Image 1 (cartoon, rainbow, N blue to C red):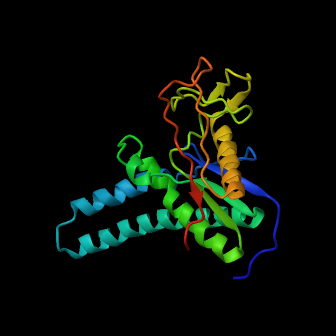
Image 2: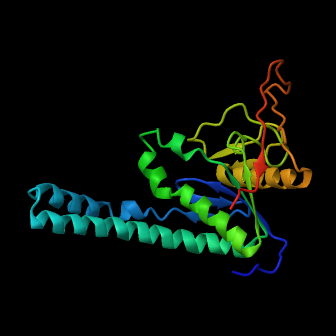
Length: 228
């Protein structure tokens, strides 16, 4: 593997479920949902396995058929992620992502299946070693950075932003934001700030009335290039 020629492009990435990735350029990469596409085939193979007598030759054949369905899903997902991460690394000198707590998110049983199918951990792993191969930089922003709540235009921090709100208007400057695109732009800005300053950054949290409360807790943003 040889380093790619340097380029000036940088990109921030916000991971999601409806859109697998949202880039700071405004591009949204749709989630292919490979597991959902083969869910009927997977359920059928599981039922056939359950009907077979334990220890029988037919059960061994059914187990192989079920394994093939799982392998098909995994191979399609891996192929998609390889093509996506290779494109991101080739087109950008630096890639900025969030440090997601995937294990903690899987405790939400309503979204656990969709989160597992998104394979965010595999995506990050591919970005890590491909950036090392091709001489690119990967910057990881702390998971507590409120990227969705910050207005990318003026820096105002919303008090709360439920997950069902996909678009919102900044009460300070009036800019209308797409939730995911705004988050990706804030992730990029935080990554560039950390790269320039070489340390942590603290976002300024402001209450709705415009004044910071006396005991306002600020969340530190940290970043670093993971070890390969």
